[in-house]
Amino acid sequence: MRCPSCGAHNVDAAAWCTQCFERFDVRDDPSQDPAPAHPETPPIAPGSASPPVVAGSPPPLPGPPPLPPEVAAVTAGGATQRDIRVDGDRIEWRCASCEGWNPLERPDCGGCGSARVGFTPDTATTPVVATTGGAAPLLASALLPGLGHLLVGRPGSGIARLLLWLLWAGGAGAILVSAGLTGAALVLALAAIGLWILTLHDLLQLARGGAEVLTGRVLAWCVVVVTTLLVLLAVAGAGGART
Figure 1 (cartoon, rainbow, N blue to C red):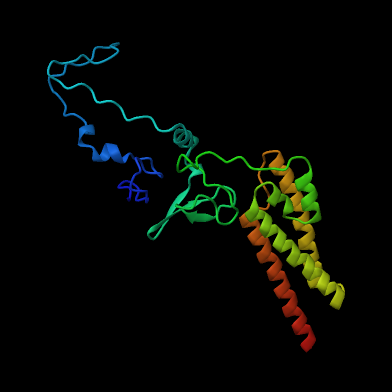
Figure 2 (cartoon, rainbow, N blue to C red):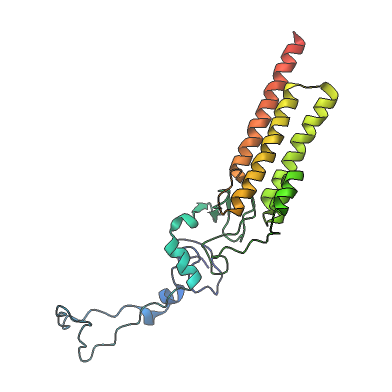
């Protein structure tokens, strides 16, 4: 069903909207409509704990039931944990780790694998990340960047780092063997070294509970910069060869 307040899609058996928490059973139940005002009700005296009961008036309606503790905790946490946008007929949420947009029905981020936070009770709490403990993730990433992130339960970020490092380091090695030290080999080698260093730094930050430097967006911009430099070097080399 679609929420009449915010337009979010919900399952038919839902009791409230998973985005704005509007209760459907209260809206659809006519017994929950507020009682009409009674002009004969006397004013409440100052300091009175509760209004006097007028003969013949219906008892006050009970308040809405409390939200589940998981949802209440997210609501109190503020709207920064559940950024929302509407793209046509689809509602999307923004990942707090890589700031990528995902469909509301998806429980995790398609870019970095982080869990969705702040929408439904089963996803309102951050899952416990499986770690190997000790220095195993650092040693794994020191040998091959990205393996440490796979060990600590971040497959999206780990696979992206691993593939980029293999591409950049392998490309630099191939150019060095075939053409010697060129500008393209230098750019790829520096990119691979920087990725290796920042991956180790990000693992230390995760162990301390801090934020990563190479988020999904930063990693994408690194790819754009490296690719642009390689294209410029190729164009410059082609122009020099003609002259």
